[in-house]
Length: 89
Image (cartoon, rainbow, N blue to C red; front, side, top):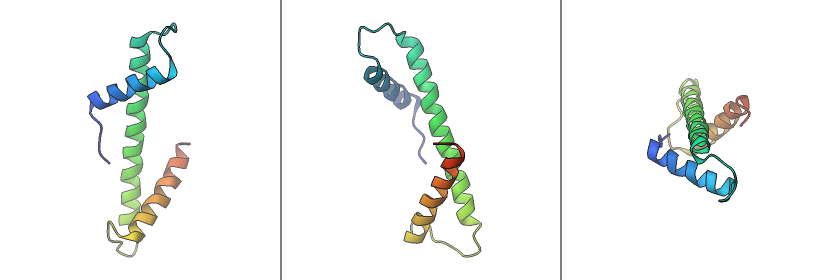
């Protein structure tokens, strides 16, 4: 998985804040930005962990599955969903 830079996470956080709290509402923009950045970072870190686990599972199969093949893609999606359920995503 590709990591997002701090600048991209900050930009996404600002978009989230604008969507959730229209201007004029009593919201500390700084506090909301910090929290949104924290949540997005956690989400992407969790996805990275799941990705690593899924790739290890596929690599540990008794047969060789070629990365990029249809079988690999199906296994990746299935295993990713299984792992994500453990995190209640």
